[in-house]
Length: 155
Image (cartoon, one colour):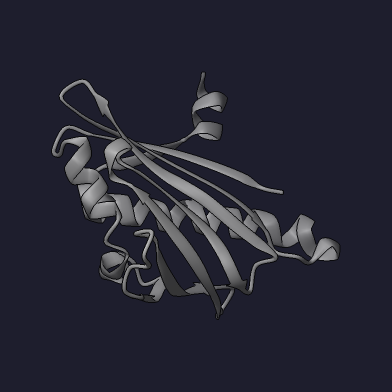
């Protein structure tokens, strides 16, 4: 199962503000053509939300519904697909202090559920996810994304 880790640093906003911006999923289509639609339902009694996503992938749309669980005290949130085109899709966002700004850490695990094509489709899906998160973080925070794999390869 592919595992994606992306990091971004920004001196422009503190962790609380970065978390607030990242938690506003409705704004994501403003920053990338890849995200076509995000609908967020009103909060559930426990404070979590359910959101519906439509994202461009390989000339079509991938759709899924996820449960989003917020932890404002730690400036983090977790998501997990409840239905949709992935076999499974889950991950988290974390905004932590770094110098005078914020380090944003995005993680995701996914399974497209097509074992016979995994060797071909998984790298495409992973690349699409990395690009998408990069556009969103740049738009929301003015930050450039680096990823764990690229940092390891450089160093």
